[in-house]
Image (tube, rainbow, N blue to C red; front, side):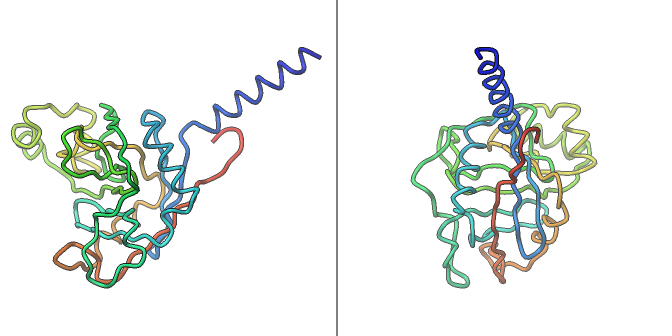
Length: 220
């Protein structure tokens, strides 16, 4: 009897661990669906994003700030019922998340990262996020970036190669928390980034979203 109970407990623990690893969500938009893997190295951001997604918090929110060759930003609760042309980006959930910078998580194309205001601790917004489109860089451009916007910080060799081939936004590294990566539907980023916008970078035609946690038992 004891062996049976122990075995069941062990199986439940293994299942829970497997379910917790690298959770995935799908971001559904009029331009297609993106599948995003959330990183376990950033548990506070991961768990908060999963919580809001399960609550359907993001349903009908907009990608309210779109800058081609940079990023697409969303998650402002005020965007759900915003009038055309209204400025957005100030909505929140009343709390922030401490930064979880990781040296191996960087702003490559498709990176999911937390937006934030200009607070001194670099704490993240509790709900707003962006997905990187970025652009491809040359060695010369990356060298210049290291001396200027990165304040002398060297971009690791492997990350430099990604920025030279896949592209991204390296000037944001170690300043905004990256907590996920688009693993399917990268073309959706390009489609949204290409829409026409107003002077505030808000799309002229709304780009709403729904986010759903992908449920899968055992190994994920």
